[in-house]
Image 1 (cartoon, rainbow, N blue to C red):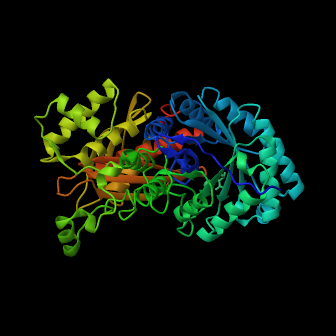
Image 2: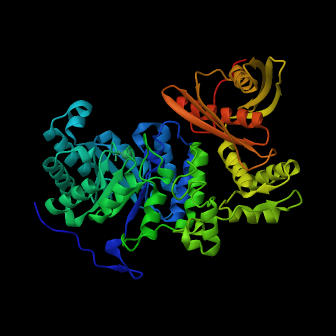
Image 3: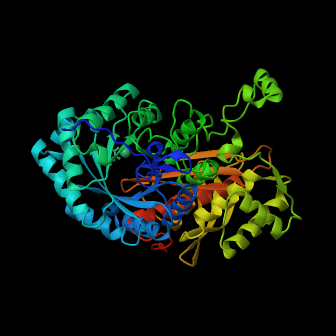
Length: 531
Ligand code: KIV
Ligand code: ZN
């Protein structure tokens, strides 16, 4: 084994290419694997589009062998992405790799990411394979993937709990077979920064061929150290970071893209690296991912939490008024956060509304724009002040539900002290209107029971959450509903001034996803109605 460190000397726009960090986003793959975070095809395309615009280098679009839906979404993402490399995940199996290769056929720069576990515990219990068999699988899988593309990434699953000698042998085998990127995942979120630094450093020192390839980190956040571990890997010489918007991902999630990027930008004195990311897209991307997955962002989450730039205490406010640098290490504008502003009233015209949408980062097709404008007018008729947040909730809601096969047409609820509470709902199911009535323990229960009457299903309610979009008693209510069934968890979200309407729509939105996933239908196509 050699003792060489990579030396890349070219310079890009005054910046040294050797210090560039490749941002690999896996929101659509590892993020979507998080229970309840499933996205429809349209939602995935929207996320891919914004990732591409913000300058992500590699978009991991899914795991094509996992289901026909996954295959199709990787294929569609590959078609629409203009700049980024689009990547598909595969296990170390010929059929997985073939599926990934087929899904990526239309990508401008396709990448196949193949992985196998290398830790003793994974090899013994999960794979039930001997070390020599795993080593052979590494060579075979990378060799096979190279038949589809020159851009092959290999990952050692559970690398941080793998014996060093064996890890070196596997990495060497992957490089010899033609992998250009070697990913070192902390699959179970177990490592600490010093250990991650030492691991990457050890691999760069000992593995022959290390100077030819890019080392990558992929850190999970089980102990809250995913970003710190990723940056430690970078300091040791890794030049790709795998991350997700909002830190979405399996269990406690992955390293958050926005935190990695802003740590490098803000502390460039001690982290002298750079990336292609335009950070002004961060807020918009965070809101979009939160909206389509119905995973709320924790208010005190770094960079994108609602309170990340809020200065409430008297002492802090006083300091901020004198000089913003007293308590602000980066500006809200640098991550695309604009002052919440009063939008317009019911007299605002199409032109002003179009400009506002542009300002908020939305690009809608003409039909969708007309629909959004109609909904805005409707809201402005009933709500005194319409804020940016209202517009975002309205458009996100429209985008999420536009192509759903089941839609709420009408709802009447009788609630109050007398009881029993009763709901009458009309749903549009593939063009047929069906009306049912049901009672329940409260108005929300009645609505959900009535929906079940129209579309019987085995989804179990796993979460029902209501929050106000803005202040005031005329605020829109944002409702999230999570349904579990058929081994999946799906989430729906909706916003409306009427909490009951938002509840019905959020439930129906989750139901659409559950049925689409169950039947493996392309989203926007459904089912059978029970007469
Ligand atoms: O966490 C992990 O190990 C993964 C691999 C498939 C890269 O997600
Ligand atoms: Zn992972």
